[in-house]
Image (cartoon, rainbow, N blue to C red; front, side, top):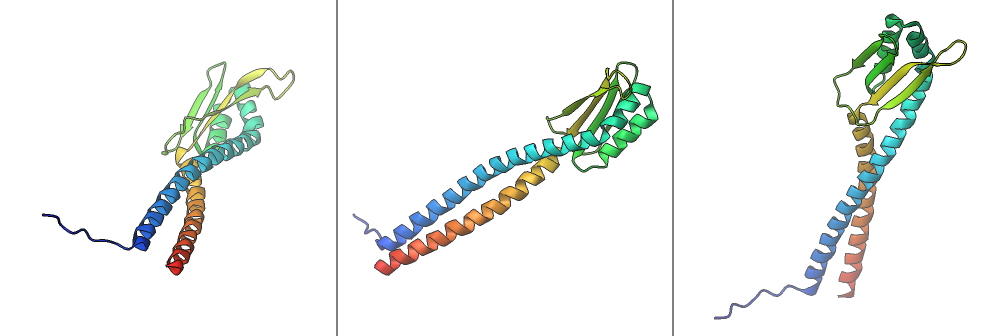
Length: 171
């Protein structure tokens, strides 16, 4: 026995296809936007970390040169006050090896600044290492991607509604 199939009008099939395509396009756009925003956030983080290291470099060099733990710990505390920083380390060739962290998720990226003697010859005296907070980078990327995805979703939705309206008007 043949069961009669329910025939749907062409405009219903068209509406379903266009809507499904629009949703898939919006999801693809959101994924690509997130990847682009992640790269932008990593680049911006590098820039901000370099500016932060530029600010603290002389004081850190004095601490490494003088082998002064008190100044070194003060430098690290100052770095950790910035929400961007997860971990800060200060080392020299002698026995200075300071490290401070916050309770955040570390990033695989770390900025290393070679410290030079603040007086005289400018010989290497130590290293200042700063690792960013991965959550900070993620929040920056998500914020930008969500705004861009919202914008593109609105445009895709409006285009879909306009296309469906024009198609239905032709019927």
